[in-house]
Length: 220
Image (cartoon, rainbow, N blue to C red; front, top):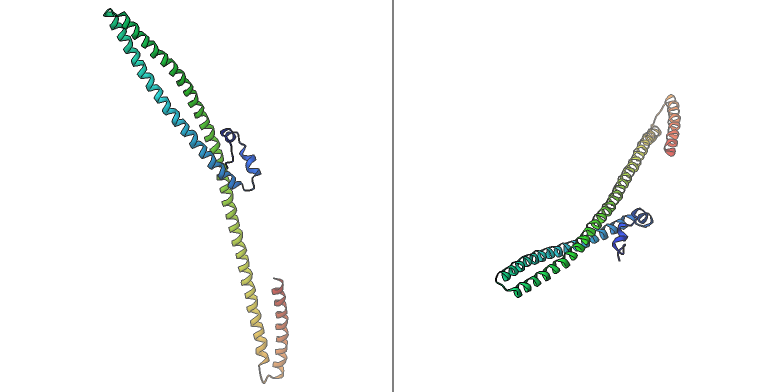
């Protein structure tokens, strides 16, 4: 079932209001454009039939005008031959042909008015269709812009995560080196008294730096 029920619904439609109320504006505008394009095809098809009919009427008028000329000539010929009866009959046919033209001329006038209305309707519909397509382009641009922003944010988040991991690994490697130094002193044998005190002092410094570094890692 279409969104619109008749041509006037389309040209009088408030697209902004319709789209504001729609749950899915992108889908709605697509349906509106499709129905407008289908209606425009129907309008053009009607115009084509009317133009073909007009050509038929014009051809009929030309043929009838030719017959009027012929009946006029026949009436003159009959009179020149003293055949008044034939002249009267020819003039009767001439009048019938003229009456036919008068009737067809009325049909032609109505058809011209109909074609003029079709042309106006077609222009109004084309204007409305152009408006709908501009709105569709706006939705497309908004969607593309949102996708680009999301992509940038996603990359930024990944970059921040990567930085945090690298930073953590750098701290961890430093901790590993400090712990290795502590263990190396524990495995040192035959240390003299001065060396042992020096080692103790160094151990204390290392332990303090290690504790401080661990605190930095925990807070990062």
